[in-house]
Length: 317
Image 1 (cartoon, rainbow, N blue to C red):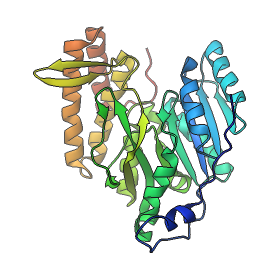
Image 2 (cartoon, one colour; image 1 turned 180 degrees about the vertical axis):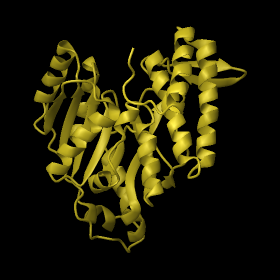
Image 3 (cartoon, one colour; image 1 turned 45 degrees about the vertical axis):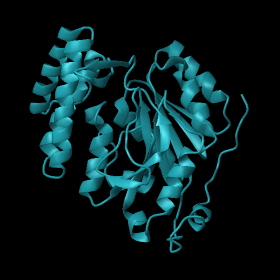
């Protein structure tokens, strides 16, 4: 597999090519370390790793305690890239724990930015460049306050976010987020006891609460799936993406949403209300279209009760 040298983006040059002409060129550090999280991911690492390696200075793959055969696939993939490294966690540390270990590595190595990806993410070839170009177009004041720059992503219905020009949003999904490492450090890292699901939104809302901004760049696109085996279904004239998540994943989704509602309802009440409606629709899609309905419904009920009781961390049997 050919090696593409890592790109150290010259932000001053990007800024010079974007209007308006007045820009903040006093940017301390914009070297980028990509973080790819794997857990029994198999061959999917061959999608994300080559797609991002030529766009960043270094790629760190964080394996969350995969089985030996799955870990061997990841190790072999990492060896093919000169700018790739591997962190091997002895157990599944969840999304927050996995990305925190990668961010710690990036901070020690002096990177100013991290970009977080899952193993199957497929960013377009100039995604990082587009994200930095959008950042460069901001006023100096907005650059200082912008902590996360995020791309659009696709599902079976097409791109998810509307529009063409960059705009600020309350939160975005984890995969593809370009994050200032200094802000990750001072804002308290990713919340590990959520384990999986809502880790990205909780981090963004915590930043929003602290006065930071999240910039969405709709024309920077990342191909992403909405579950292990998503399908497109129609009901009453509308099309829906059915993710077919596992029962455990639905447990985390609904449990962690309770934490979000309790913690951030004053900050973004309308956004959380929209997500509550999305959960109602998600429940309906389970009942109508997914297999193992009873098992998933039981997991959802358990998740809600655990969220109310503030019982977080990894799901136990």
